[in-house]
Amino acid sequence: MNLYEIVILAISLVGVYVKLQLDIAKLQSRVMGLENNTGELKQMLVRLTKDIHDIKLLLAKNQIEN
Image (tube, rainbow, N blue to C red):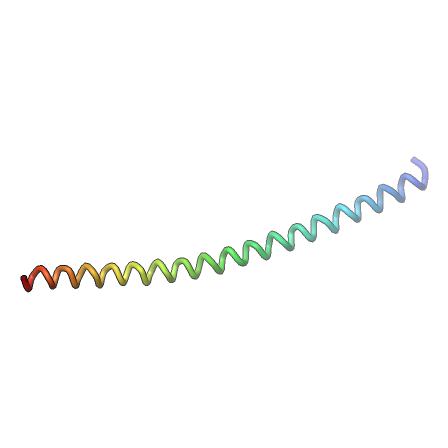
């Protein structure tokens, strides 16, 4: 290998490293976004469960009164 090939190889390796770092950063931001959405989804499910429980209680109360 001559000097020219070594320089080209080094530049290529740096380019690959930079691209991988950018891809990792992009994936980490996506993961953080998905984790935030998961938290919101859990809160919505908890509220939905509570509301369904309230509806069941109202239906049961309505059947007792009739």
